[in-house]
Image (cartoon, rainbow, N blue to C red; front, side, top):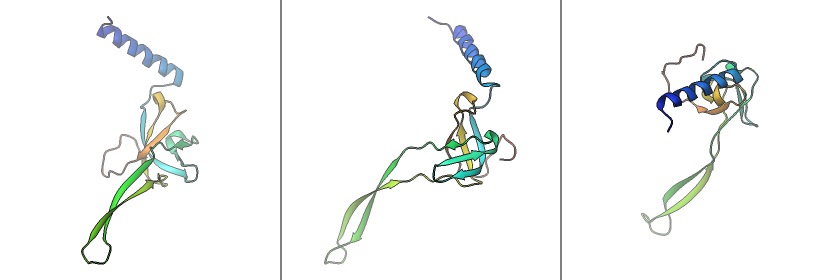
Length: 128
């Protein structure tokens, strides 16, 4: 069985090798402001990763909603109709604050996880 000390040394070695492979060790997440976007190809750019286009990561959504409206001859008779609609992803606008994930801290495969809608939170990075 591997001891806690051995697991720690393995984790330290992996961190060291990743740092050697991708340069210096960096945070896997960035909170940044969109400086450019491409709504057709669903890409954004941020100052921190220069000219690297960042794709948006999201799931397709299907929304079910119910419509109750008076139908038929008598007033007050309601029938519920289920309707379904596909939700579409919106490309973040220039100036939006987004959360970007970087694979092992590398700038090679960044992914935009979404727009931060919260206001008045503290940022660790300057000029975002």
